[in-house]
Amino acid sequence: MNNTLDTASLAPTDTPVGQTPYSAWMHTDVLHSLQTPVSDHPGEHAWIAHVQVSELYWMLIVKELQTAQRQLRENNLGHVYRTLMRVVGHQEVLDANWRSIDWMTPNDLMAILSRAAATYGKDTALQGWTYRHMVYLLGIKQAEHLQHFEPQPARLAQLKQALAEPSLYDELLAYFSRIGMDVPKAVLARDFSAPYVPSQAIEQLWREIYAGPDINLQLQQIGETLADIAEAFSQWKYRHLMATRRTFGTRPAYFGTEGVAWLAPTLDEIPFPELWSARTFIGNPPTGCPHMAKHKS
Image 1 (cartoon, one colour):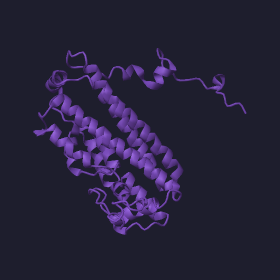
Image 2 (cartoon, rainbow, N blue to C red):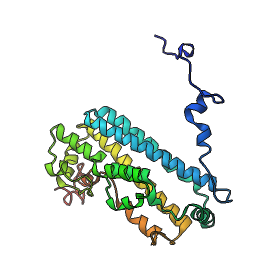
Image 3 (tube, rainbow, N blue to C red):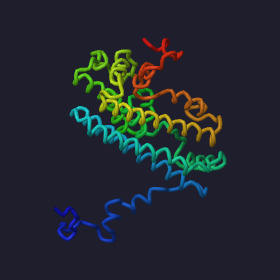
Image 4 (cartoon, helix red, strand yellow):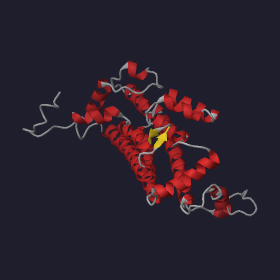
C-alpha cells in the first residue's frame, strides 16, 4: 500500500489571498506582530520572545497533562506514557530557552522593565495564568495566588476550576485504586483545592511498585517519567531563581518581598512527593552497608 500523500487528490483549500498554506496555517503574520517593544533597548525583542515562547510551552504542557488525565480515566496507561514523554521533551525546550537571555545584566533588565512599568503598570511574574494552571495540574495547589487574576475574570474562573479539580497525581492515584491497589478513601475523596498532604500509605504503594527491577514494569516506567517531569520542573525554577539573582539582585520584587527570598523556598515544592520519599526504602543495600539498618523499616 502506498502511504505517500497524494496532494493532487486533496480538496481545494481556503488559503486566504496573499497567504501561502504555511503562513495561513501557522499565522506567521500575526505571530511576528506580537513582539512590541516599549523601550529602545536592543535586547527587548529577545526578552519578549523568551517570555512568549515560555507561555506557549506552558500551555502546551497544560494540554498534555489534561490529555494524560483523560487517558488515565480511560485506563490507557500506554498512551499516558507517550503523552508524559512529550511533556519531558517540552520541558527541555523551556530549559534551553533561558539561554536566550543569559546575556542580561541588571542594567539591561532595568532599562526594559522601567519602560514596561511606565507603559502598562507594575507587573509581577505571579500574574502568569498559564504557568499557574500548569502548576495546579502538577499538584501544587495554592489558592492564595488567585488574587493576582482578579482583573482577568475568565482566567480567574479557569484557575478556580483547575484548583478544585484533581491534579495529574490525583488521577494516577485514582487509577491505582481502580486496578486494585490499596489507596485510602481519604486520599481519593479529599478536597482537591487544598495542598496535597503526603501519605505513608501512598509511599508504601510506590515501594510495592518498585519492589523489584523486573515487576510492575509499566508502572515503574510511569513513575520514572513523572520523576523526569518533577526534576525538570525543579530545574526550571532553579534557572528562574538564578536569573533573578543575576539580573535583579536583592531588590524588592513580589509585593515588596525580595525576589530571591520569595523564589528560593519554591524549590522545595516538588510534585508527586511520595514518589520521591519512597526511594529511601527502595532497593536492597549491600550487606554491611551502614545505611541498611536505618532505612530497613
